[in-house]
Image (cartoon, rainbow, N blue to C red):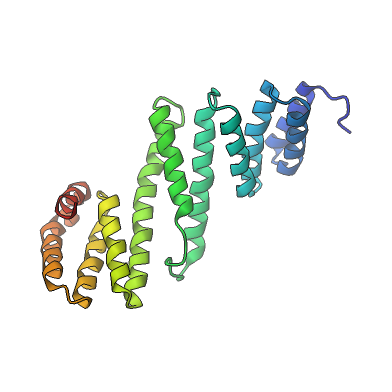
Length: 237
């Protein structure tokens, strides 16, 4: 069907498929374009567009694989900022889907890897391309992800605590305090840490943590979560 088609036509037809939401059709044409015109600007664009098409076709693994190839083959491509943004977006939406389907299910056996990968991709985008058209949105998503990951880690700590794994719950709570210093979730992490120390019979540590909670609760009421997080970090570092 496509024998004899020029690169221009292949790309035009693939673009038409993308605009119509015919993701599978577009992917097949883009694959032909890349294989028939390897290491050309057409191949570069085809690979990047394939990643987007796989993403929209709910094929996360294939989308990320295409981005891996793109970044490996073309590390200095002018559209690298978009590739990083798309990688972050794919993992961001994966994390969103996970949270949406959890319902009452505990998070302890769930991995936050998608959120971490999204955070890393958006962070790299901002560091390398601070003036990119995608940077502002990436910054907003980073704030959301930081709070979301902190809440997820707190859920894991709570899971361990409820099951009597007090060393594990204390360790996870400490990680939240150290890693997500400005997140509102830190207050809950401190409470879990205090209660874990209490169950472990570590009364001095329990009382120290309780004093820190009392000190910082006014900050929670005034929504000064950032300052509260800094004070908690100063104590536990």
